[in-house]
Image (cartoon, rainbow, N blue to C red; front, side, top):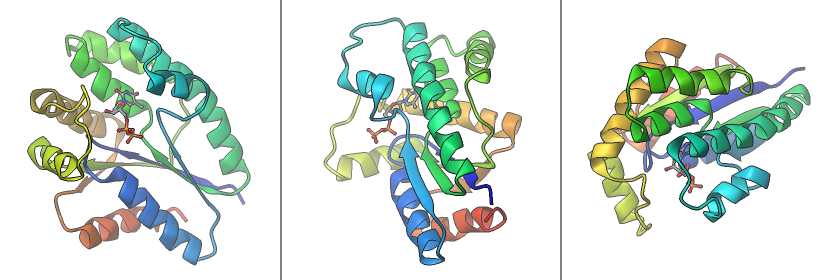
Length: 198
Ligand code: TYD
């Protein structure tokens, strides 16, 4: 049996990582084989991005690095799906379009370019789940976890990223879930999407 590829997207602090872990636990309890993965990856180009070793590169170069990481990642995901696993992926191509277009001028030319550089290197997800939340609430969550607020995590910027995500959701048919609800309710909404696939 071929597996399933599910992507989780959303602004920082929205709870993607926790939701992924809970979904994995529920699916494993049903006897399914689950692989959790994330971008930037922790290998090769992903590790290079995370290390900050690229230094002060242009926004376009940064976008190309995320896509280069995605190219290798997509091959690994395809192998897992072929092996019959449910792959839960924390961020994928929409992150590059939503974040990097907010960092560029944010106009439609940037967006079209970012979509086009992804097109040859991106696999088709069976579902993309957008966990949507007001950045004011998500930043509070990041702060309350005692985590350092990264350069991506300021309010005006995240508001733009959220708007970009909502636009992409319409363009690509993502499942938009209100992530400001309680953890159990969010999980229920997410499982309703995944149950149609597994
Ligand atoms: P994040 O999911 O927060 O990783 P972790 O929780 O493991 O630190 O991702 C790190 C940041 O990278 C996040 O602020 C979003 C940003 N990002 C992009 O700007 N473009 C991309 O294509 C990806 C995958 C991530």
